[in-house]
Image 1 (spheres, helix red, strand yellow):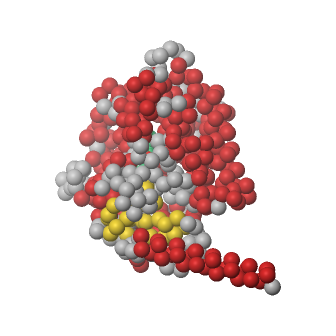
Image 2 (cartoon, rainbow, N blue to C red):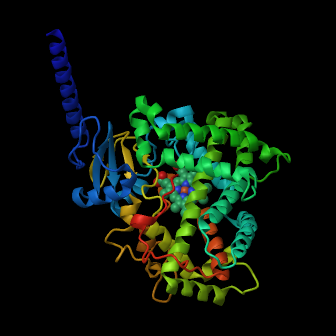
Image 3 (cartoon, rainbow, N blue to C red):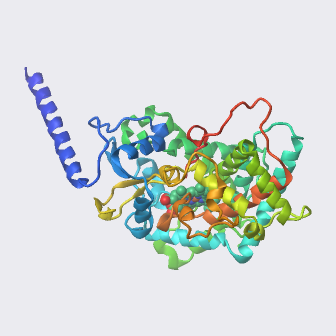
Length: 483
Ligand code: HEM
């Protein structure tokens, strides 16, 4: 009898708690439509691995700004240009935070990382320093070009070694992109088929699994079940392997004294200056910065290049035009250079269209409000998680026939690349915008150009004999790297 009474009381209290929470959330988010059919404590149920596509479908039902719930978290999703531009640019500082996540709290990564740190003075300082270390101007660009040439030479001889037989370009492009990032961060270059490159690839994959927008989100919500989950084991393994890689190679940048030209070496010098004590530039900060740059700078570029080549096998007329343009503007005897970018608008348009078409960072990185704010007249409370749906933005009705690969969108009637303020360029936000815009945007664009121009100047890419896939559709086929 007593047990029965206790259970009844417990049920009533639980229901009262849920009801109170629902009322509180409803009042806080009264301006934002909520996706219906929430299950108490669980929220909206949907296949997490297809999050960006589900959110895009929901936007058609609930409008460009809506919210859904994942366990106890209320997430606001922005799906159109007006709301995304207002959040990232007009009210950029209000929306520049990152949500607290157990996965990033783990080992204090949220206090040391660039990607996962909220909008703190330390984050601003790190962003500024890395920008200046990357030196994407003047002599810095020449250096980047030479670093890329070394990798492009290796890549071309690998391609040559296949002697026209079918091959998967992904691992080759991945190794090249990875080596450039290693060189820029700690001045290291690995052999493509060596054990250390395989280790790095494994670290990357493990981080991708445990940080993707998919099922790994559960790690943040049900920590008591972490020990049962593969993602948790993968995260732990990723961190252990990463620590070992870091210990084995971190000294690379100070091996030859203080003059090694790389990002971590620059940060290390700053960390010993008392002026910067405030920013707490510890060994963990150096390690996390290194991890962020390697992860963010490898998969994204290798995926974009692989997808471009795949697209060109399905759109041979586009490949013809790129090659005619390259033949016309760059003499056969020399390698494409960054200074050629202005003379090959068609290739530039193809690179922009690739980023739109595949939208391979479909939800950017989650943002969070650092104060109460507004979007398009709707109130958004402090500490709300915000998803920026770039996938929806890049495939909405503004883009006629959005699932067609059409570089013409970025060219004017004379075949010139439309200027940066043109509406199509403004609506292409593959690197985000504002305070948390991708730190590697210029680097990525330069590398995409040098690699694609070098490959397409020399080779024609065609489908292999057994390839029967008629069309490519990013809705079912793109690789989705994670930052
Ligand atoms: C095609 C290539 C790339 C694409 C499409 C891409 C896209 C993005 C996107 C969408 C974000 C999130 C922006 C936001 O939070 O709103 C981001 C962040 C970031 N990216 Fe990239 N990225 C690329 C290449 C790179 C490269 C080469 C680097 C290396 C330097 C890099 C470093 C970063 C970092 C450090 C952040 C976090 C910035 C922050 O949180 O403040 N990315 N990127």
